[in-house]
Image 1 (cartoon, rainbow, N blue to C red):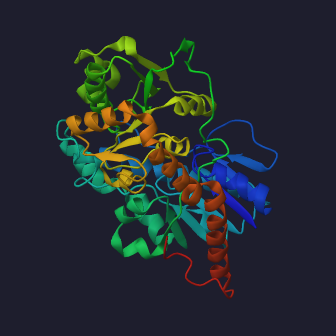
Image 2: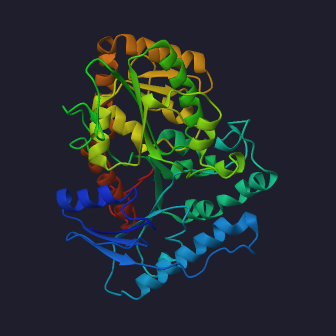
Length: 414
């Protein structure tokens, strides 16, 4: 089986699955990407350049679609120049539009990976009323999913990593979608005995460690709520250190509109009295360092608006962290309160702080929650589980396209 993976930012969601299929299942894999860098012996990389894109003069509401079409044409041109590439299957990330024109090159099925369907209401956009969207952003939300709708219509089948994300897709297309998680490499993401160090800072025995991890310290991931909770904890206990991992920037939303040009972290710290000598802001760290930090954690706080759940949540669970999460849809899919972690309403600082203090008062008594979370990841979300499911899904789609027996109905179900 020759699978052609398409994503502008290698390795993204497909790197692990492509590598695993090559190593474990004998696939041939080709990766089409915009991101330059060294390839691997097992996976050939083909680079493309978008042929066009939105400019400042483009209509604000259609810019996402213009950019997606530019990516799609760039992918098409790069592959048209490689007639030796003849895949049995194309797997692409919807929203960037990368696979839109590939049926003109290949007579094989396309599977699309769907992350998020944009809406102006009952969504991340209106979840935080103190940070309201502009009228033009509400309007744009109706147009941002245009390429996703094209892919939903055109793909042979699709998948989402969680049921919550699948339920965000238009109801008339959900029958085409499977739910298969990207996969966590539990040989890497596991609790490991490590020295009590954060960077070059020695953490004394007996000091409780509270961790918070987000790609960016931003509105979407509730960094301001975390800092309020942390302040309550710090006032109640003198033996707690807070470790915040993530960039001092935003990746989602429009944080800069509310911060006067500062980062959201700077904005939050400037508007609150925090004992910063008890905080370590590490910036982004490499996976090995994040494993070491999570392995020291007595409590991990994960907050998010109703949006795509971060891989860091599953990484923390795999590393046997006691997770205190926001009681929002994407988190509830992984955390069952009192079984695999703890949940409280996103804005309920009192409740979040109270639950945190219960854990920190007796971390050992809460270890069963952490162990159950790690077991859940191993049993349901690890690569050992998701790779065989993904392979079976791919082969069913290809068989159905070829009209082979056993290839019918490739998409319904989890």
